[in-house]
Image (cartoon, rainbow, N blue to C red; front, top):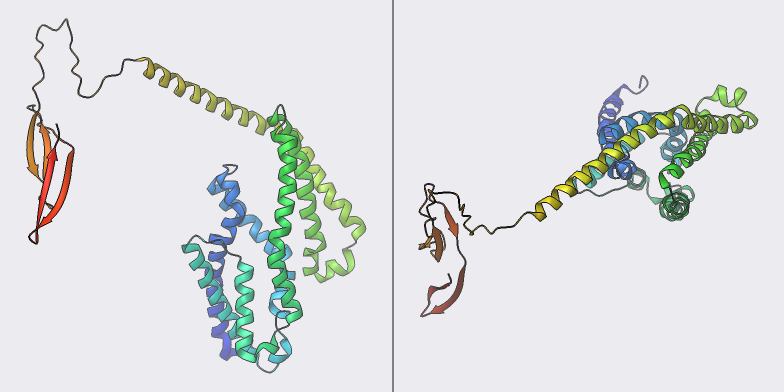
Length: 344
């Protein structure tokens, strides 16, 4: 900002608002990603926060540049703002404000939304307001909008296929735990290999020297899938057996707890049941004195002034138990009366 000191405040305020926007991303977008994992108790909420903090940062560092390039320069025609860069600065700041309000508002009402939708829509709005609809690069923007509708459909189909395979290969197997234990190594191989490939293929474009002189698809593919293969083997030994022992202990403890609870319930059902009003008499008690009879007492409700029957015990504590009152209301001569039928 050395060339534009008068606009330094926009950069400072924009940076501060960026923190609020990041807070909204964590509260909404990250919550969307980890909701299934936390709800299924695969990981705890604290572990989800730690994983998100690490890998959200790594994803933004290695793969965020290509998306940033699209957002900052391909949604609108930058030639309209060559002589007025301050408008772009102010427009991006207002886009951050709008997107932050949208994210935090949606989070308040527990509505899952996309951060990409909010910021792209905000940028389109600011450019239309500044230079009109002709300033929007509609060919690129239409692709973004199409991806908004296509991505749920495509991921829905992929999710259906993956869960269908998991259901029939693992869940319906004779021993689903062992089948899932060994299948997890294959899942690690595929997911980690694919992620590493994207980091090498897309993330290295952020580093010009690496992309021009080091990058070569001939070593990127075997290196990426080789790392995935190593992770899959490490699950089979030594990490997998350790995790299996812990899981077996927890499952055994849960089964023992359920058995103990069921045994206690069965013993309780086997005991003779007595009503609260039944008087238990001990035949060996020579000092037995019959319990005092309950006397019905009519009282009136403090607010409605309607008659209420209570049963008063002649005991030391003088407990009162509310009785049932059947009430009928009618109106006569513009006066309201209460009529109660009391049943003992």
